[in-house]
Image 1 (cartoon, rainbow, N blue to C red):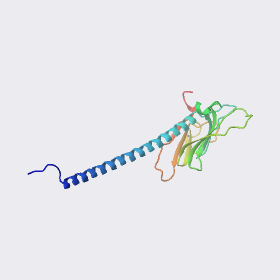
Image 2 (cartoon, rainbow, N blue to C red; image 1 turned 60 degrees about the vertical axis):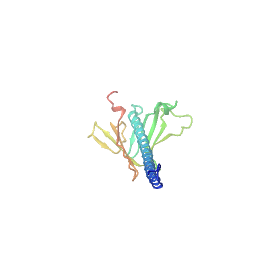
Image 3 (cartoon, rainbow, N blue to C red; image 1 turned 45 degrees about the horizontal axis):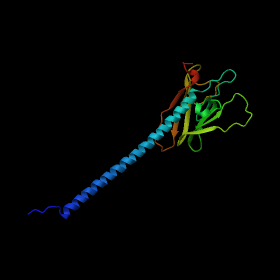
Image 4 (cartoon, rainbow, N blue to C red; image 1 turned 180 degrees about the vertical axis):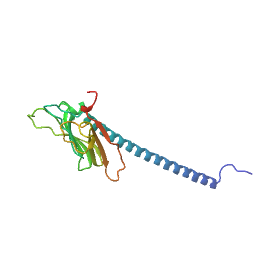
Length: 197
């Protein structure tokens, strides 16, 4: 004669199997959440780096070549770059869009952009402090190179101190040791060399 229901052993086995299933599902969900968080942070870092590179490229492309009265002021070394350019409308905020821009890595290993408004006249009041923006953190150093196609033998140089602009400016970011980020070199065509002008 068969009894209805389950034995205690059958119930215990079912509970153990259910426990294993729940533990596996919990670990799977935890792994999925961690992977999603890591991917979100990685995407945010790449987006920040991409925005920084686009900002620097735009400023270099808008570099002021100067004229006979006020020649171009691009001065570049192997690890720093300074020049006169045009700030975006939002950053200018009524001061005029021309700015003296400097790019380099500070002591906190941050790639920093500093901009002071460029005037063709003498200020009567004290100059406002330069705008400073951290483009990318965790940078060991940045390498700049400058290319001239006309005149002498075309070649990349690690220094620029001439009165005109180079044809191209290249920026290579080197991250701190152990940082696995890598970003391709930024190469910008200076405004003076564009064929549409």
